[in-house]
Image (cartoon, rainbow, N blue to C red; front, side):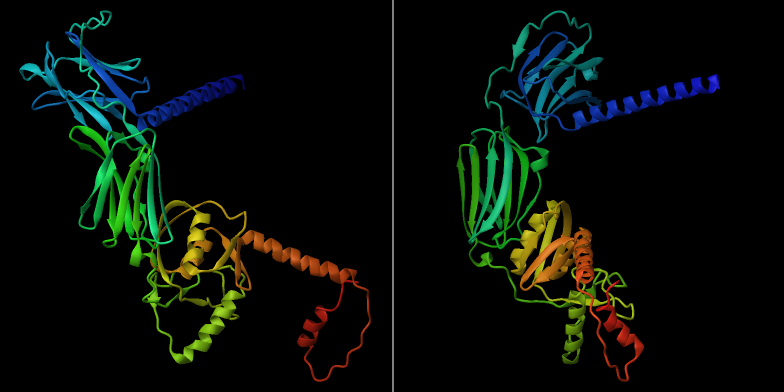
Length: 454
């Protein structure tokens, strides 16, 4: 028994070590995957070493060698140089170093002398990246400082971007962390390009702004990083639905792009298609079939819709008395919804505006949702969202309440319990009925609603 206990202790200790090592590696990977923006302030060159001085000790860099011709490459991630020089002379094994600017890094390329590379080491020392080779004496301070002339200064960073369309005017607003110089707009076909000089944009904000679902002249806006005349810049490419009046205004920390939407301010409703699909959103064959309704089918369609509405907002579970699935017909205006991890309440707000419906959301309606729907009737899109998020509806006149299905079920149960309690509290009465030629099942149904438990 003592031997088994000893083995268990050793096994648990080993598992703990493995777990800690795994967590440590995860933290390291996360730290390297999202480096902070840093500035390379200067370069110091000694006989057998080079210091890349930065303004932060939170550095992330990669180093590797290439052949034909032999080169040592050092990429400082998320960094931008403050100086204008792009090449320097180096001795004792390297012929020189070249500097290249990229959207997410600054690259230092060390060219080997005499078609060979010396054995080099790349390490971090505080705020510096140190490249040493040969007989480098790390205890001796470097004697030569180069590339210390500041030309551009620390770049501004894009803090937030926002798009809105209201009253026939679309507004795209960019907020920066510091004042910046702005690049005037240029038109290239249906694309308007404008941007910010000496700026960077975080990875989280480098996403396509899809405006196609708005009554706007803007189709989409794509932000991206680029290099112009050796300077890192952030550009925005706005794809337009057609020629309209626009303006780009850059003041201080804010850049605003506005369009007068004109004929694009109203949603197009030229063609309304009627699509018949099962309530669960997918036909038995996996495809959506478009059907036309004959005059004789109108009554059947109205009856089907009436039965579906009696389900109190539980799409996908509607059945006929024979147990067959009810087919629901969608006649709403076609919409296109493309969202990634969007707030469910904002999606519902958009559907309410498109459908012109009075939607009231319960406080319990929350969470995120991703959609890829193209030219889908708005009422079908609403049903799909309800199914995905386990929501239901309660209609009262021209107002539709949206709540979780569980909440609706609780409300139904409470209502039934309340009715039952009222019955038990009513004064007991004795009544006599005369019945002629009625089956017992019918009489039982009537009496069940009248008889109390005592």
